[in-house]
Length: 372
Image 1 (cartoon, helix red, strand yellow):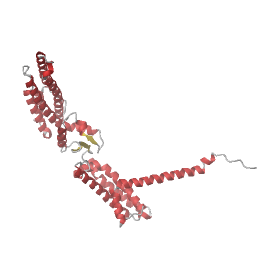
Image 2 (cartoon, helix red, strand yellow; image 1 turned 180 degrees about the vertical axis):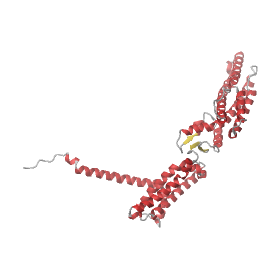
Image 3 (cartoon, one colour; image 1 turned 90 degrees about the horizontal axis):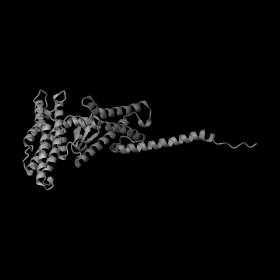
Image 4 (cartoon, one colour; image 1 turned 90 degrees about the vertical axis):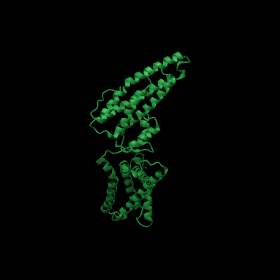
């Protein structure tokens, strides 16, 4: 019931509880109005005027009882008390006030006259249904942030939540869902909103975790460069030299990789579908893509070693090869991995054959008896 006392510890959580009740009751009252409108239809009495009138009067009485049970006046008072309290609720005050204003209008226009004709009841029911939809929309805007936080709590960082699927039952109108997404775009709730795709991405927690996520790709690149140089200095591998060429190749590969990301972003901008690759979102992009970027740096490290073992240098034709390798990093890494797997498989087969020839297979075969 609307007027129940909220069991909450702060004005913000109390407001959330009250607005959740508004949203729930608005849905129930919409169903009541649908029944009322059906009772007011000409065929409700099966062609018998007296029966139709009796059905309509009973439906009006039931609708009045439903509204009284919901007690919107008491709820409106509770919400207004919270909004005028000491706690700053300005972030959701506009929508809360809009909902309470709708409640007042709903009380005045709710169909209660048992002697009203069917046409007037239908008009009134439809008008109140629109008021209830507006109330539900504003209530959802207040409660949606906490609902989203609960949904995102169960997800890994960087994963996407389909907003239409998760909240389609609360916001049945696609236009309303788009409006709510645009509203959430500027709110802080632990997620990043892609309004075009209708998705919400889980962000790392604020503060140090998000900062570390943003610098992780750059830190990984610096550590990878140091590892390359240190490896070349520690082990005397002729093709690696003193490590300088490895660093130059590594830099060229990364330039090619960054160019590829830029081109992909441009393509998606031109097609109008800019998901999480949108570089314009800066910190959010890094926060969500950091793990993939760290993996990309590690793949680049492998590609650099492969290029150098293939006698590719950072000058002349090799410069173009290094840039192209970075641009098509995934494909190049796949080639190296395939060759590595083939080499390992061939080596393993050879080793198995060698071991077999040296012992087990021949030892189990009886030798012919010596001729006296």
